[in-house]
Length: 245
Image (cartoon, rainbow, N blue to C red; front, side, top):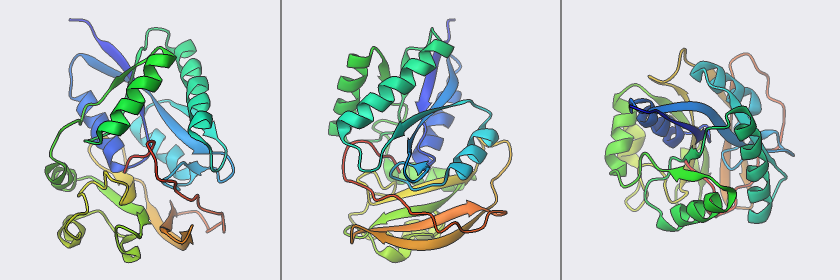
């Protein structure tokens, strides 16, 4: 039986982790690399605001190579698309037979349609291993199977600022207001995963500075246990079609 080699769009959050687990559970799929969008001005994962040092620790714990897609702050969709095209070009030069890029999207049809249009133009095929699954069940399974994550960004127009910096656990799930998706699929929150079955070893993280951006997005910095706070700006999130929780 032939094997399909894929890359995974890695945001550092729980949906990416669940997508990686789902792909690795398929005997005919091999994940060869991760692709992460980094905001150059902040040196952090775009939209999630997670430090590059934490991303690097995630990558080591996952045992997969990383391809970076570098964008400026407040990048337009066109800028994001150009950066992704460059990153995917780099990826294909290293793995010429890879034609598929997987995403952790769950149910937003406009996001899926955007990715399908973009990747078709770039000569790639998107894969959505979690598509259509019940998000409340996914969230419970994430917790029950031993994954650990922390909320790094909260859209305070949809969820209280006090949720930023909290553990994504059964207590939090029980306290989410009605109308807030359990996986944050509508952009209610973003996460940073630091332990779980896909990790060779857990990351030791601690929370740091809190920051409100654009009068709306509440960030909580997370750093490796050995790091000192840098006073580094955390990136404002723009509503749109590019983020995963």
